[in-house]
Length: 313
Ligand code: 13P
Ligand code: SF4
Image (cartoon, rainbow, N blue to C red; front, top):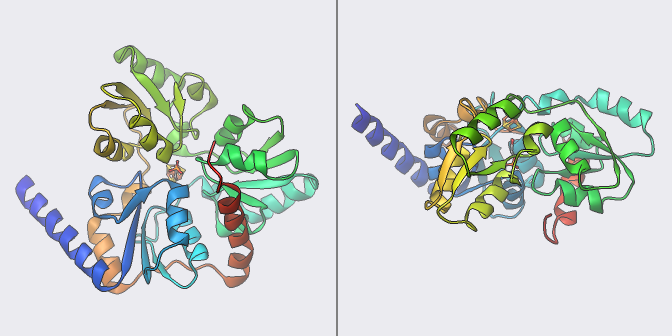
């Protein structure tokens, strides 16, 4: 049975690679994707790395194995390309926690503030913002953007993490990532007890009390870089389970333990190999953004890419 599944998976991967070559399609996969989806991708990475690749490549089609806001950002950064999201229902609940009308009201209430918006947001919200950021460059962007008061949308946890490093005032939104928010300080305390001496590495979407207990607080791309600097260590990983595949690939001499029993983003897991193949065959579902929204939102993304050019904090 397992052998049959493996044979099917191998065949699917071969078909995907061949069709991608024929159609000049680039497959991008976020670090939280299923192992087999990451394995078939041309590039894997965090939100910033994937946005950079989407902005600069000569493919005709981008198959985005991630969630909706990522595909939307790729479509805006690469308007001449067709961007496919293999499951149209792969959304991000945190992105849906910030609406354009509510942000307009927040702006009106704080007319002197600069709006820094996490890339995990809708295009409509980006269109009302001054600059975007990702978890890899949030500190850099807040420091480099003009203005001393910052409305930070939508992740309250990332906003509170950035506040630790800046004298600027962060006015937080109330959004959060349900996957990271569920992970408690008690869960981490238990993992530390079970694995004494292990290095603790968490994502800044985690609660502040979890961040307080970590040795390293990193974006998923930052985690990939960090594990390559240590050897023979046990590392407790406080983020989505898909991360383990990439960490084991780049630094197999460390031991990785997932913190918490169910660290899983159901939306990231909606993308499967059969859906990737179907998407390549049919050229659907295509992600598009209305031109008036895209014209404003893309400025916010480009501003982020410019401001984060010279190194990340
Ligand atoms: P990064 O991969 O940019 O760290 O983001 C994590 C995330 O939650 C993406 O949805
Ligand atoms: Fe959104 Fe959280 Fe899933 Fe990332 S892990 S896509 S922030 S729900």
